[in-house]
Length: 456
Figure 1 (spheres, rainbow, N blue to C red):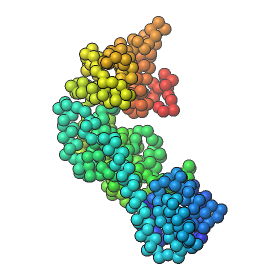
Figure 2: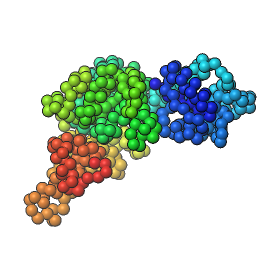
Figure 3: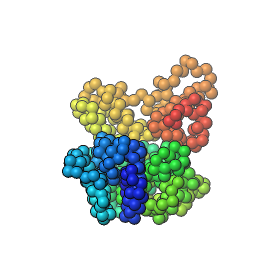
Figure 4: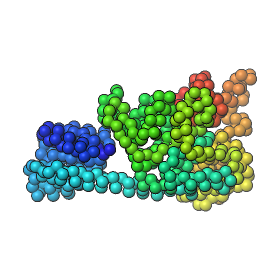
């Protein structure tokens, strides 16, 4: 649903135009002065502004200047009963989409509004296309020659063009988001939005608002209407990352949206219909979560129409040399370094490491090695010293200060937790998965070792 802001100090005009444009399918917001309008422009996702020219103390021309300074592409239609050639020229030079004289036929405004909104939509879609091309989310970005990865590539090719909901499973760092982007950018929706929601990073209340949006005043701090990710992704793809972390209450609401492709914003009553392809990812075994009563079975079936399982890096070691070479080339180019190689000793180490953080951990290790390398080849000394392994623990713990077994085990435990948090970007659910312990257990140990931070 496209949103139009109407600005006029004649309140009768606000009522009449608001009702008319609402009948044409627009969501309308009104303001009776330019100052109020500016606040709405700054805090609300708008598709069009229709403003009167003659207002005080700030007139329509000044309002137009302020809008264009911040949102140069947002279309603005000027209307006035005091139309002159000079004012019209000034408005157009400042970037007004068009100029309309009062009194006017409602259909004239409707045609201008439709043209302005469509033009703005095309601008946004073109920018999204440019960004997509620059990002190059294609099969070239998913590296692997192993048989298991060839199965993944084949699955992406077979279902990318469909509307099917896809559940992408795999350990943290295996490339679930990259797979989701490959599905989107190789689909007919490639020119439409690709929107990501990190379900594990938000509380239940924030996640509901993030998914479905909220109306102004829906809760404390909701100072303006906000469109949710489902609405923003209309026509495109919505990717729910770590979907296994959502609460039972949100699961119920999500199920309804998947079934009907409609919802109401938090605090609202208007039903909004969308056309969204849904992709979801999790590092949890959702079948087990269903059996334990933590995840709805009907939602699981809705999400798991097609399943793409990504293998951990330790189960496809033949891909490590290819991935390492790819990351070396990528980061050498980004940092302006000459072409680098990898020494046999360093490559052997990379191939024999278990990579609990999977491809993401390997990428970060190579990025660091490229930055620190001084020669033509990446050597063992260039690799991170904190790669998980007992030798790394030996180097990172001051053994001289340890006097007994419990203290020693505590030091080792703390170091492993720090490493897991680093690999998972401080997402506790992912860190717990890497360590093979429940999240509640991890939280206890974080408190025990004084490792709780604002990002944990």
